[in-house]
Image 1 (tube, helix red, strand yellow):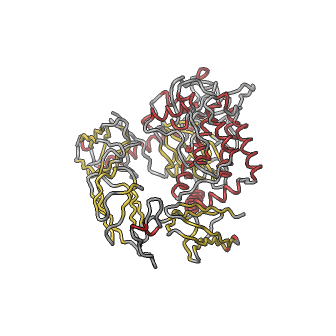
Image 2: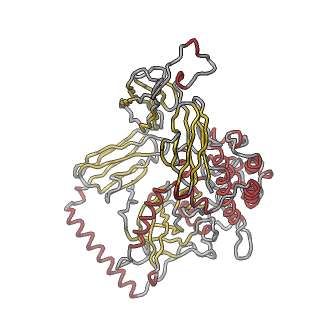
Image 3: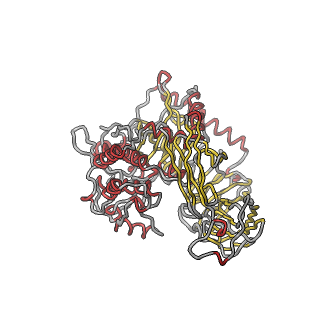
Length: 637
């Protein structure tokens, strides 16, 4: 089996581009942050989407990749990521596209969930209306003769919506879009995209149109408003069945802040029968804008920019510093000749006309001389490298890798200049003797990392068994000072009090330990993933509460109610604000927003928001009940 040579030592030249940083790696392609150099000192930071070597020989995928660029290059709209060029360099197909400095919606939602917050309804409505505008533009796009292209995105999901730090919302990745002009037809019945966001007609294998995208966008909107997954079963089959039924409760059932008008909008977008849905994304967008206007809770790009700059302040600072450094990089003295790279035009001929959407340019005699000289230099360097390495071919080792799960991703010596990558079953050849780090990963399975040692000329066979997340069980020991505390693992109460051993800890999942005892402040810690065959020990010293009242006798307790001190259940307070503010509880500084699940005994408190720079000084009374989790979100104009 052929080895994978997809690794890159960065930064490095790639045609007229200078690859700076690996942004993301998917199942089919990898995305780099790169700098483009042009004439007269022209420079631009762009994103390069490059097909992975292991799929570069897949003719069907290459056609789909080319189709993506031929469709996307036609789209020029403020809410759609712009495609600049499709090309082929060093036998690698790539797309150069607009770089969006920001976060995708999935990342934003994860950050909100981490601090136990829901995005305000007006902000959610704004994001979806912006996506609607870009989607409607694509749906209505025509060719030069005003013939509709009938573009359908087919993969509307949080990962494909990006919010920039400047507050703009962009729709990305028309990688599996379907248009009449596509040279590769998507077969009816073939499922592509992310299951949970598909429409009923899509999962049933029926022909789809623009209204399928509207349903998918409705799913995203529902999840933004409720913080809950709409169609998510125990497995793919159950998920698909839920989508087919399309039984949806109003979002207000899960979030009381959602008004009836938004319920109506969401349920119309999620109608099972496509004839009952919005027929165009523009209708969806118009209703959202009317809601924002009538509710008096308008949201703007400036508001979005403020949110992003405050909520991702550390990331913004880091990425801004990186971009500043990247802008300082000058064009290398010798840029290699560009191979078979040409921009895709919206009027580019079809494969049927010319056989390919990618063209090579003829070389002048001067260019041929330069190419010949470059080849000689490269050959000389390669020979010198072989001499330096001092190894004959027989000294190189090889590794035959397999697993019980096909297409497990194998990475050898990750983040080094010798990194290699492949999918099981596969062979890695030409390996240096010595110790190597190897990792195995696959979605839904526990990652495996090991060290192996190769001798000269070795031909080592390596097999690894992959376990599904939660399939294996391990254990932890929890001790507390004082003893006798109530223990919770991932919010599930453990029968035995501390100290105790818990034997059914799932491998591959983050484990949250919470310890509570009457008269002491509760303690909670995310101890991360616990490896198999390991007894991890967690020791906790509980902090006593000042002036804790004496525990009442059992006679005074009733089955219907207990005080915080009797039951050991604290209250939790989550606080956020726009812009940020320092938070004082009864005059004591707690920290700056956002503050997640701050634990307090039940009672009355005065919550003070202070930000001298923004002239914010507001106090709000709050009443907390035993076991209650309360959210306090303030927006200061």
